[in-house]
Amino acid sequence: MLAHGADAIPRDPAWRSRLTMTVIAVLVLWPMLVQAEFKPWILWDEQSLGATWQFLASFVPPAHSTEFLQIVAVSTWETIAMATAGMALAMLGAIPLTLLVTERLSVSRIGSGKVAPVAAAIRHGVRALLVLLRSVPELVWALLLVRIVGLGPTAGVIAIALTYCGMLGKVYAEILESSDAQACNAILNNGGGRIQALLYGALPDAAAELVSYSVYRWECAIRGSVVMGFVGAGGLGQRMDESMKMMAGSELSTMLIVFVLLVAGADAVSAMLRRRLA
Amino acid sequence: MTYHLTKLSVHHAGAASNTLALRELDLDIAQGEQIALIGPSGAGKTSLLHTLACALQPASGTLSILGVQPWQVASAERHALRRRLFLAPQTPPLPPRQRVVNAVLAGRLPQWSLWTAIRSLFVPLDPRAAWQALGKFNLQDKLYARVDRLSGGERQRCGMARALVSNAEIFLVDEPLSALDPTLALQTVAVLKAEAAERNATLICSLHQVEIARSSFARIIGLRDGRIVFDAAREDVNDTMIAALYHNKAASAPAFDVIEPDLDGARPRC
Image (cartoon, rainbow over all chains, first blue to last red; front, side, top):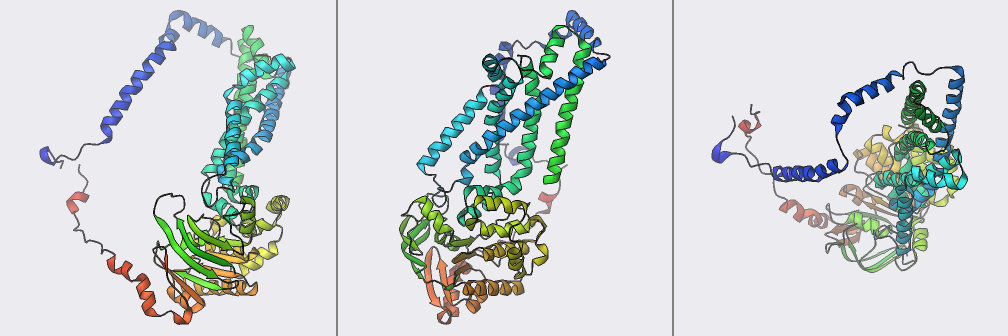
């Protein structure tokens, strides 16, 4: 039986603030939608539907001539190579930066909880460097680099390496910071070095997450390298750009299929590695 | 002299508040002594062990460890001092996904170079040492098991085995018996004492098992509200002192109110 009147249960104290937050969210979001010209109904008018249908119809069947498949295979390989080389370079930069930025591994903080001023300054500097690296999108790096090193995958590799170095450094550090502090602290308290604390204290538990994040980033790098192909960084993206300009829907659909397969492949690799490290 | 403390006060870890975990302690400990640290929960046993391990900075007073004043010297020198002592925390700090052999050999890390440490992750460098250390705690069969396959008591003993493979001159062990049955507890204390005596290492154990403390340790320090209540040889500790150490807590502990079960409230309202 529900209580009524004077015996009514106290009102949910969260209710008022939730209502306020909703109203504020709507008030903030509405001008943004207007600014972004958010008019989804355009998709459904006669002309758009016709154009969409025509373009989509040309997708079937996907292009499958031997010659074209060969070209796709070569550019796919180029894309994978670009993403992998970019990731490798990014990790090469990110791992030492992570070691510098992770407060968990600080020796000077033991006892007082306060990091020594010099170490804190270095940590802030490295953090700023990571922000700088990842705040410039890889596409912009690629545009700049294409002007410096010329058209081709080199620009794409360096662009991925720079942006992803910033992202990996930040997320690696966060994963390490959120792992169990005890194991790390015990090794540091007993006089172990910071890298030893990382290897024996933090890595055993964080390894699976670090690996799966790296593989996910590799998947993103594949996508990113396709996008950079549009600005002349080679690979599958450049082919896609050409086909797009010629409105060759069948070629596009082949490349999109390759694309889905690549992402599915990265997913399978990630699942396999996670299982092995679990 | 292993330890020399004068008027040492310490705040709780991570809290810069006014509450002190330890108040003006004076304490001298010689090399090779075996000491039990007893007292009610919250008396400051863990804070004291952490302070003695250079893992907690005192707020005031002087602390000298093995002739060094750790908080007067540079961070690197302080860290070098940490290599000579071993702090075993109350909850064994073993990553669940690590193998026991690596978890135990981690006690050797302070003596290892970085390359040795990396090599040992791939091929354990001295599995025999880990095997022998585990053998002292009846855990030999767990050498290559993963830590998350161990029970709570096994983890605790695994943490002790890590202490044994280190070459520390001081062992600071925080409640090593909390997850062990009475027989295992006695065995474990015996192993720790024998190992410490063999290397002439100082052993300081915080314990809740007063009986074991009184039967096994030559010197007993009673701690309460951050102060040393008594610091005496085993023979001089009597039941009255023990009762006084724990007494008030027990008396002032409020009995749990008996709540009339309200069956109507428990019934789903629909």
